Length: 328
DNA sequence: GATCCGTGAAATTCTTGCGG
DNA sequence: CCGCAAGAATTTCACGGATC
Figure 1: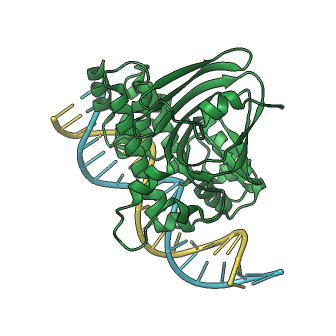
Figure 2 (figure 1 turned 90 degrees about the vertical axis):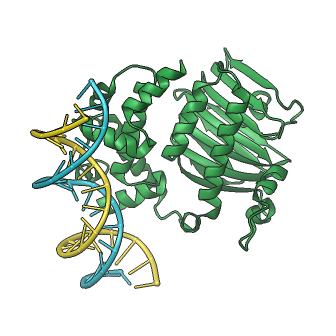
Figure 3 (figure 1 turned 90 degrees about the horizontal axis):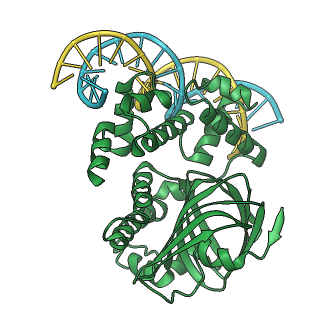
């Protein structure tokens, strides 16, 4: 693992935060090339100083990236692909594909560990504290929410959760319009605001979300992650719950608790979400029709597939294809 | 080809009980 | 009181077939 002063790139582009927002309204596109890696990072700063950063790259070496910041900021980030670990002020956090984090930070130090094998795709939306407080300002019902109150005296506070269906649909729309499309900036900003609204609501105003805490050990969580991987690897013929728990040597009770904790859903809920997301990708790039997509991701009959798809994305697969066709 | 509907199977949640 | 597990109750899911 090579440790690097990679700041120049990442401090500015990747985690988007802590840089001067000198050029509102600007769009930047930064390709990554040898020897660092390949891919591209796109960054858009709106007039309201909201920053939207889309990353899609792969590194050629394992890296530990140190980030330090004196400023304060709020960031909502989505890890779409790849995994890694972050430690902030001694606390470790997992970065897992399919998870979303809302983070509040000021004057902190963090290090990110990335693995060269895993491509990284992520979306980060950063907003200045003043804008955040402004968004929260008109909460009339009693307790008001603001940056200082949330973060307390600390340097960092984070809420984490799997990306929910509404959000993943919005993100896919954003990804489609990264380069072309008229009124792109307006479009991106509106979608980013929509995401902020969804997650401020779930993280900051949903009681039970806040009280959930870690209950399993690191090694058990590791087994849960293994189980998740097994499940994804065998989408077309998944093991039963009991088989799965035996495979990773963890009793089914813990497995269920673990899935709730790590992915925020049940074991088969997780499987289903992933099946449907993969199916959506297939439909999106025209790689398959509805029935083909259903069978690829492991649905034996299309009927149930359509029903699940609608349940998750609020739209029938056929309708989804039709609307996509209209876009082009 | 895609969606809607009824039914049995399974997974999840809820409840209770055991041992530390 | 806590962690865990077994069993009951409830909910969700997958399938086949009818229908659009």
